[in-house]
Image 1 (tube, one colour):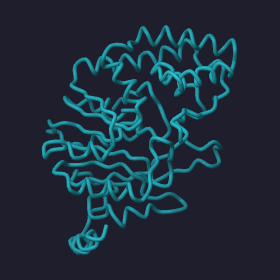
Image 2 (cartoon, rainbow, N blue to C red):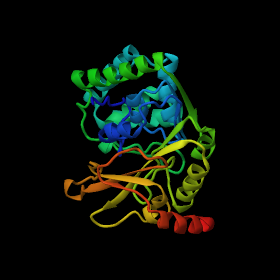
Image 3 (tube, rainbow, N blue to C red):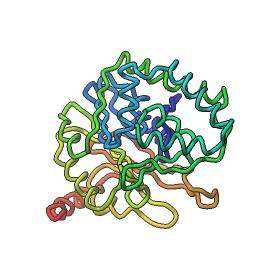
Image 4 (cartoon, rainbow, N blue to C red):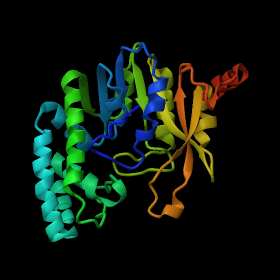
Length: 302
């Protein structure tokens, strides 16, 4: 499967996991695809369901993709913008990056958000407690070469063409508001920040949120697919056993390039949790009846 990379990239993007997630989605699915944690949108943009509701509490992500859907951001506009700002970056250097960052933090232009996501350090999207984008420069003044601009423009073009033939809705709202929207004919795909691994102003995650997510998904009539981490070389995700083990759990090794130093980058066992039998045989773990009884009792105290 050819995976189309979206124009907004960030750490933890699920590009390499898209084929796996696609295999889990029932082939006859015809409901609404709902994402409470849209992020980059890579999963929905590649699965391309007929109808989707994509939500996130980061208003800048929603604003960017809503602008493409509305036609106020087009491939041609992106090309002209990046050529102009890329030339300034090449001429002036990193001070221009910080000028764009300051401008974005004041005006919230979605094109500036695209620029920052592509010129910031290590592909990070991070905000401080005041909601200000604070990722430093990647120290590559020649970042926006003609070939790189063409690549980004093509990515915008793919999303624009998809949104012209699909019924996608973008909403800036919390997962607590989004999950109850699901019906028995829908699939809710959740890719929350991995607890203990990723934190920023818009996507901070803690024990209370993980348990709230568990309760909302457990109470929903919709089918759900949850991306999370199972373990790495140093520790296990304790919520796999304390919460999610009552459902179907599928695992695969995945390597994230998110560390500042190569020596600190390690493989991680990725987990996908579903409340339906996805028919995936590779590396799957299924709950036993005795486990379900015990977990039903323990869930009363969550």
